[in-house]
Amino acid sequence: MLLDEPLTNLDANLREEMHFELKEPQRKFGFTIIYITHNQAEAMALSDLMLVMNHGVSKQIGKPLAIYYKLDNRFVFSLIGLSNFVKVDIKAGEAKIPGLSRPVSAHAPEDLGHRLLCRATTSVYFLENRHDTKILRIDRSITPRRSAFVASASTTWL
Image (cartoon, rainbow, N blue to C red; front, side, top):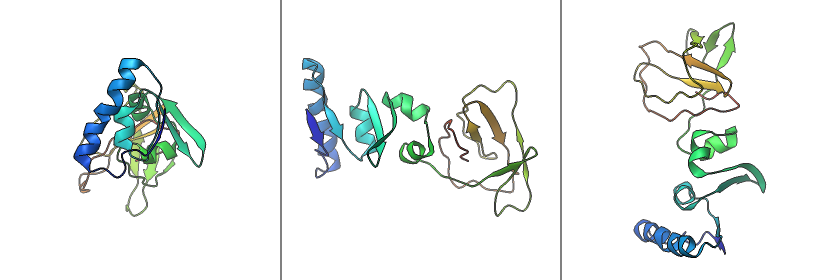
């Protein structure tokens, strides 16, 4: 069954109820639904397998939570969850952030696993890529205004 934005014109409560109405017969009878949506919450809630596309080109395919926790590229990162991009230049072990008066050091502790999921009020963390994890600690005079999920990726996101 092909469904193209079937819940777009429904209010939020009815849309959520319809998630169950769509999933129940699909699970009961085992048929395939190709569900096209621009709504991330719908895609995550309804999908057993999710395909993220950009201009007709496949950018990532996988189970919804696998995509959420292991983003393949900047485009998928910009769509899934909340994301903020900040330019960071790294030279000789120091990270320079435009607008910050002094560089900060970038460290890669040996005991740090491939995944860093944390919240902090005095530190900002970024993952450079899947194979080379680094942590940025910015001095305490900077006051973070928001918290965000940080995922592994092939480009640098702060």
